[in-house]
Length: 338
Figure 1 (cartoon, rainbow, N blue to C red):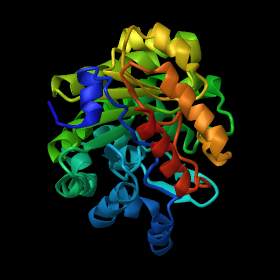
Figure 2 (cartoon, helix red, strand yellow):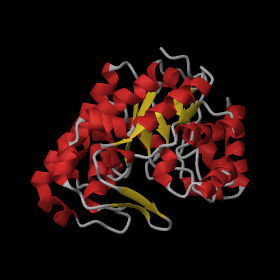
Figure 3 (cartoon, rainbow, N blue to C red):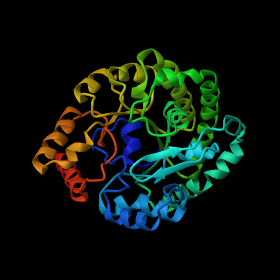
């Protein structure tokens, strides 16, 4: 077993300490990241620059006593690997070109891996530079979330009409199968390069109706989770926004650890997940409040998960307006608690 606190918490259910990392810990709230970004306008190109991707991944660890690095990349490198162009537009987020179904379905796993090679080189480089006792998290978007981006062609924050979306059912099924195929390869490539934990982000699973969750969320994710488990690597799942369906997700998908979002009551999660290690939960907006409020909310999670296998994280990514000092303060609260 890897000698890092996250794996120890997940696999051995060790409760002697609370491992800490933050989703989007390498990003816009750090002035040193903004400096690099100023010089590198093309976001995807930046993700595919092994030297800079490694440097960005390490930035939060130079500042904070964190237990894991997560590779600086994006879930949308996968549609790009499947020959769908992706642009990140300031103020709009990702914009994807029309999906050329034939081109996507004909993409070989060899071509896919070749297009994403710089990402794997970055993981290799990061593993070399990272202290051995720190976890290196590789990640991917779950098939459903990637389908949403590939067919909707942008972030579905501004409502998505699922009825229209599912009119392309036959095509969606074909792309879903293709995604599962290349995501297994994407997982293998990240593990070979040095990732020793994988997190699956299903950022838009909350859009699905309860009756559609099994086919589009649970079943595709089970295939990936089983594949990761066969590699003897812990897997964390984050099915954001599925509310009380978290219980069904945990029972059905059986990840090694589940990340809860900020709509989930931590007490409810602890009592309903059968002792499964839990990660995250805190609302990122709380990090924009006064220190005493932050302490109150952080302490709530620490008290609920006392003597329970728990990894401290948020219920979504760090917001750009967050002050780095706040992250420092949270780490101090957690270290003092134990």
